[in-house]
Length: 286
Picture 1: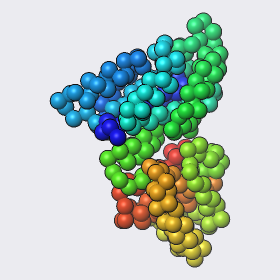
Picture 2: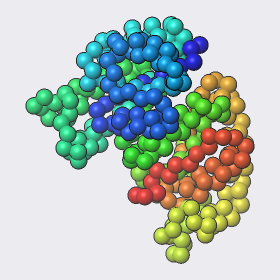
Picture 3: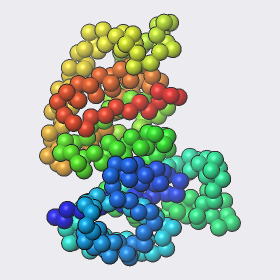
Picture 4: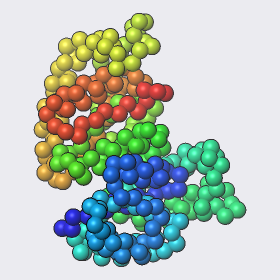
């Protein structure tokens, strides 16, 4: 196996590829945007012959590069045949979110060419269908802001430098929809709700008064113990299968009280025994 680790970021225009690439650059990856895919083998040769230690490389490649769709498969098959570790990360969003993002930035879709943004999105989605099917990881960024997308990539790729599987606990509110990228979804709406306690309603699950309220109940403690047994049972089995990250989504009604407290509790618990443990609170600012 070659030492160089290559990440290729692709997907729909407006789905957050530039943010993802910048995040990997900040993590120490050598990053290049829109490199012609036919130049990739030569570029890798230059990385290998460099006097600098270039062992982690990230590229953003998409329909802007005219030969990408035609040459992607044979080029990467050849590199994998030589023993290189290559991961394809595909980013997408719903049509409505993409249209809103293009409207906010006043950018033209690269495939619209006089037509509507929606037509460009539809065409691009169809053109990238086969590529999406080859992806190692598909990330729907519809519900993610810039900061959440950055955090997601930091968690996914911390495993490049650490042996432990990355473990993320994500709080969310069911009224805002179930997270697209969760490996496991837990419903804690059966727990007593601080929302109906007047002095706690405007606080969130980070506040000690709210967490104290949520954690004080026998059913909460019983649930936590059973959940820790369940997750701890699964972790080594997932690691044995080569999984590099596990996202556990914990949901309550609005994503502000019970789910936040539980996600923080689980993050603190597992951080005592392993590295690469994170918490994300998707709906806390909504």
